[in-house]
Length: 131
Image 1 (cartoon, rainbow, N blue to C red):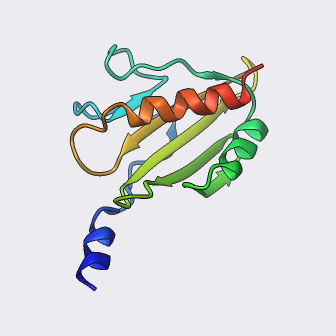
Image 2: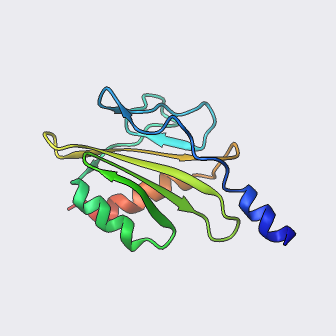
Image 3: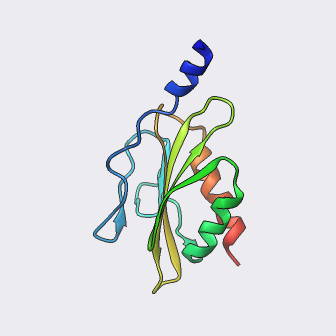
């Protein structure tokens, strides 16, 4: 029972600041556990993905650690839960259909460093969907 309770504690609460505002996703905190295609800081910046929302949706459904929470074009929000400790990361996708890009933001819900997990995740999704 104690083990189960400790795992549930790793999930944290879903942020209330998720979603798009004025055509952009939220900024990353100062901690090095977030990447976003809207960020200008090198430590947090990642390129948007050259694809469409349908391809992102298909990729997400093939990843066992992901769960799509909200899917209303042009936005998808998914949670990724680590298998070992049950940590949850919040991952957002915002399609800009006119440019053929999907902007991304991936952030750890708890902790300070993610050892590059959010960046690796987005790059893995990019490999799955970019031509």
